[in-house]
Image (cartoon, rainbow, N blue to C red; front, side, top):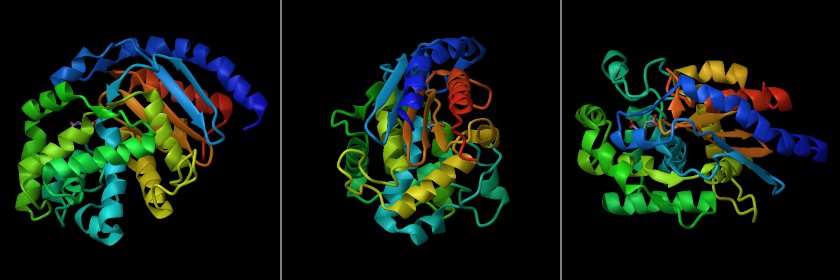
Amino acid sequence: MTTADWQRLETSLPAWVSECRGYTAQGKVASYIPELSKAPKDALGITIMSSDGRSVSAGDSELAFTMQSISKVFTLILALMDNGEEAVFRKVGMEPTGDNFNSMLKLELVQPGIPFNPLINAGAITISSLIKGNGSAEKSARILQFFKRLSGNASLAYDSDVYLSESDTGDLNRSMAYLLKDHGVLEGKVDDVLDVYFRHCSIRGTCADLARMALVLANNGSDPLTGEILIPRRYVQIAKTFMTTCGMYNASGEFAIQVGLPAKSGVSGGILALLPGRYGIGVIGPALNAKGNSCAGVRLLETISQEMDWSMF
Ligand code: GLU
C-alpha cells in the first residue's frame, strides 16, 4: 500500500465506523450462552495491522471479547501441526454444509458420518480431540500458548465466566460430541474434549489481538516482527481456504462477493479477516444478524473493502 492509501485509511476509518455503527440496531447480541448477552449492543471497533508494521484502530477497538468460533481456525492449524494433513482429514471433511454451525443433521444423513468441515461445531469439537497433550489441562495450555505466540500477547487468558456459562448450557454441543464418539470419530473422553473446546472458545482478546493473529496468516505463517515461521505455509493455505468457503457461516458466499477477504466470525460478534501479504484485521460488533455474523462488523468490512479496493477476487 502506498503512503497515500494508508493515510486515506487512517483518516477515513473513524468516519466509516461512525457510519456503520447504526447497523448495530438491526442485530441481536447472542444469548444462548447467557454470559455473552452482557456485551454492549451498540459497540463497533476495528484494528488493522499492516505487514510493514503500521497499525490503525477506530471505534471500540479496546473492547475485550471471547474469540468463540474464530478460535477454530487456530485449533485447526495446531491439530494439523500436531498430526499432519492426512490424519486430520480422516476425521473432518473439506466442504461447506449450508446448515447452521451447530447442526448435526448431516452427521446422520451423509456417509461417512464425519463433520463436513472443521469450522462448524461438530468439526471443531473433533479437532479439539486431535490436539496433543496429556489430558484436557495440557491440551488447553498448549492452545493458549499457541494463541499467545500468534497474537504476540503474553497476557491472553480465558474468560472464566463465559467458559462456565457455555459449559453449563452447552447441551447441544454435548449431544453432538456423544454422537461423534458413538460414530468412532471422536476419541478420548467426551467431557475432556468438550472442556478443551469450551475453553478455546472462551479465550478473550481485543481487535488488536485478532489483527495480529490475522497478520501471521497474511504473512503466510511468519511472525510479522521477527520473520520466525510460526505456522507452516501449507497449513496457512488450508486455513485461509476454509475461511473463504465456510468462515462466515451460511453467509460465506455473500461475504466473498461483498468483501472478498478470508475471514472467520464468532458469536461474540468478533470477525478476523486478512488481505494476503498485506493486512491483518480484527473487528468487534456484538449485535449479530440473522446469519450469526456481526451486523455492523460485516457492513464495516464491506465499506472498507469497496472503498480501498481490497477484494481478492
Ligand atoms: N462456543 C460457541 C458454540 O459452540 C461457538 C459458536 C460460534 O462462535 O459460532 O456454540
